[in-house]
Amino acid sequence: MERTIELKYSHADRLEELSAEDLQLVKEAEEATAKAYAKYSGFRVGAAVRLRSGKILHGANSESEVFPSGLCAERSLLYYVEANHADDPVDALAIASNPSERECYPCGGCRQVILDVERRQGSPIRIIMSGNGTASIVESAELLLPFTFKL
Image (cartoon, rainbow, N blue to C red; front, side, top):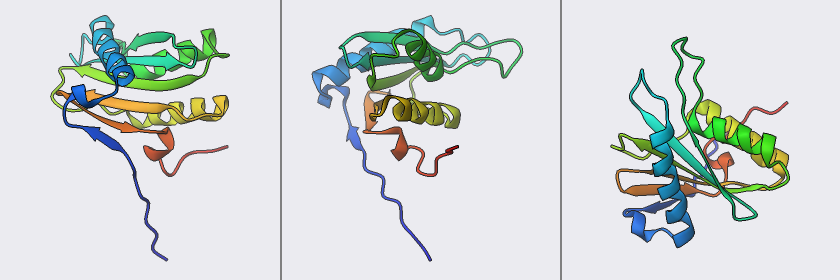
């Protein structure tokens, strides 16, 4: 039997179309790209989260000479949040890259980790994927990973 999965997302053709809160988070993620260590790929990724308390935190990717030992911006940030702010759920996550020729989307591993965080905190995370002056937004990682791994 054939089935269909529907993906609902929002798209901003210009970042200025975003809400003030989302635009601020994208700008914070863009600034976080400067903290990336991307000596090998030259692809700097920054992430920013807004916690329920309103606090904003940043992360960036970090590469290693012993590839694949590096870590994506999203995972490094979310692991930090869980270790240091576990009582303050993540409401939104923005991702940006430099260079920014297109929107920056999370890899499969990051998609699963974002979903794991959603499950642990019991609430969805709004994900804003930005780049080249545009952004796509989903209201939960479940929309990025419809066939999820679950123990």
